[in-house]
Amino acid sequence: MIIQDTEQRIRALKKLMVTGDYPLVSPLAPSELADFMTRTPPDGWHGLKKNVYEEIQLLLRRRPDYAHMFICLDGLDYNGLTLYNLAQAENGEPLWSNIFIRNLEARDNDIYVDPNLKDNVLIGEDGMSVFAYNIIDDCFEIRDKVSTSYIIESHKEFSDFLSAVIDTVR
Image (tube, rainbow, N blue to C red):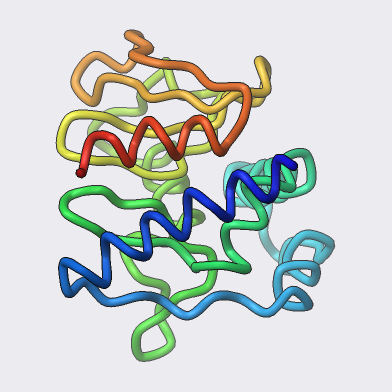
């Protein structure tokens, strides 16, 4: 039932994207997703890079409703709403909206590392919010982009989270 709810929300997003003439991204094959979820980090990856990779894998294994999104659509960019992708690339390089790249940049930069996001995997954003999976509380959160300590909404189910973000772009 939870996967069906997620598929229903993704169909609604796809419909909005088609109506608004936004490009749809090809989904991942189930075997590609399964491979990513079980593959060990590349040799030579240590510390933060390895931790980010493993936390994304943990999210995908722990939350099949979220993982299923990638079988329907590998991320999206619609009307200011971005859900990060897993595999998209341009000229062999991951896009700026790649979940690994976004999480690595959020935790390893010279300007500022946000302590409010340390137990979270960033999964997307819009103009006013960041979207995160809270590893400790096992929930999806919509947080204020400027003051990330402020949780606007929290959802135990990914489909409920999707409903909330769809409402912001209708």
